Length: 300
Image 1 (cartoon, rainbow, N blue to C red):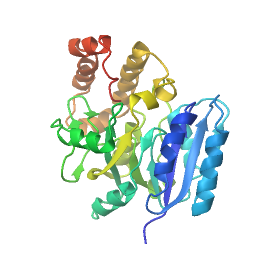
Image 2 (image 1 turned 90 degrees about the vertical axis):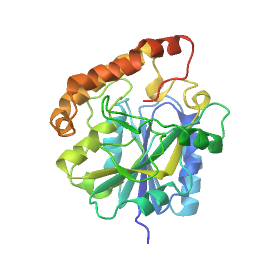
Image 3 (image 1 turned 45 degrees about the vertical axis):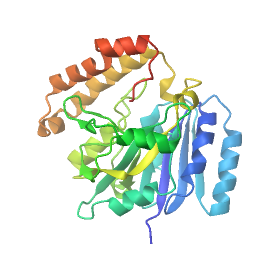
């Protein structure tokens, strides 16, 4: 029998976005609970939550909606939600992620058995406007970029590594054993603005302090909504302009490097080199030209 599963997701002022993705969550293997943390939204989510509750009741899934009166940020929202999770495993995800019906099952099938505790993540494929999931997957499979860039400590989250491989971290969409959180693992609440690095932080903490192993399962995939649907109202972590977004990328990255300097040194990473590399990758001449010409937003 499959382990019981909780899906945990925060949301802030993106009711219409959540409405597009939650139906894709319902078929995940072993799903017994969904925990949504409404992080101080001003939008009215009642219709969305009513539809979710009806669908969950029909399938015997427990829906828990946790409301924060003021916006606290995704890490604090997830920590709040963790207090209400009761399943054997947790899938952390975002309110703009489409989950194919077999995604969790594929993560479990390909998860290395010898590793304990183990965190696994799927590839995250960013849909373009007007693009089908099939076409997006074919496009992603042609990308020969490395999945993990050890120089800048960043991911190209849609890359197909073909085989299951170990990395220092994967994306925010990750399947966790609940035992890690019962032992005290939490998200660090000090990342501000767009929350850059907030999903990476607990994975490195799990690696360093809980002897966890982290793997990418390339046969498991999920899809990020296209820009016209995910960012149309500039909600969530995309609520600011480009300058605002880039400021928080580099501010949070500096905090991340300082917090995890000892762990990163074991990966043979130079903190200064990592900081410079990310700065060049995101704010180099070619990137600036792309932004000014209206190119697609960069991937977090």
